[in-house]
Image (cartoon, rainbow, N blue to C red; front, side):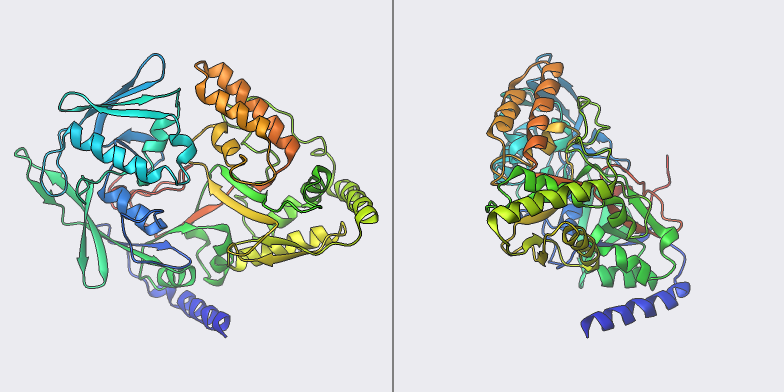
Length: 484
């Protein structure tokens, strides 16, 4: 009954789309998709998607991302990296916290130390391992000292999670206000005397379920929908006429099946390899009716500039029929020796997109003699669908997602190689060690790549300041502004 009601609401919204008004860039409305919306809080760990947008807008870090995904100055006006790559020295801008107090290097260093302590158990814990000390120097200089080189540190510090707070106050570039049940953010400016003033233009920020966010867009009640994922894609076809408004971000990352069970069947490398061979990736992806989704067969993207050229799996050049025939023989051999087995449990997020993808995978597995069942991500599972955008542009990020702390099927040797790479002073040596670790993990086959992740937005015609980018992140402070 609930599905029927949702379909009716989306259909009615589609028919009323023509009634929407022209866009007002000084009064923007932004919906962030969340499957289970929660009240926004910049102090929550981990941040919900809408809370991440709120923190990124009101509590800038030393650096930030611009509308096109590039690292740009924020609290820091500029920075230098020491020759040994173990020191990052930031010169702060002259600015104030949102309560009017001038920002000092001591406050920034203390706030950053506190935030790093909060993040030590987060998904960033591996990237933070090389940070040694944070030192305030003169009134406007902060230095980060490292245990080993961290060439992607700026990308890490630009994440919204590293926006800094001083006694609950950020430093902009926006300030949040509430009006009844609505939350708005407005850009702030400082005059010559340091007084903080707010621009008249504002952005209303809301978290909504996928169906509600898309219905609001179709009804002209919102101008921008963010955080669309693969499981929400079928809703786009339910709200007719959104194809021209849909913007896909070409985000790098991991989309595939992580081995999280270690039973007799999955403990055999040949069986895991058979699953990887049997998935008909192009057929699964074309089920969604989009052209912006590409299959992948390697752990880290082949286009990464700091990744060595590595061969694809030896079966990559075979057609699907040949791959399935080989996989079917492997499964039959295992069953002859061990007998029948229970269905493998695949954990996936809720949503129509997950149902479509699972149906394709189930058919592929049945064709080689395996039964599978879909379970929720909170349930015990044998395989888990991973859908993650890479936070940093390094092979290390991909390989560290597959360490022995992440999955019972792992390679201690690959972990050792990654630890060596963290301490390697020369870039060429890091690339060599990353490549060796990736070869180890590809042989282990503890992750089955399917495609690159998908992130999409719905953008009202005439909206200024929105740009597709390779991070899938669209800072609120740029929205509504004329391009420069």
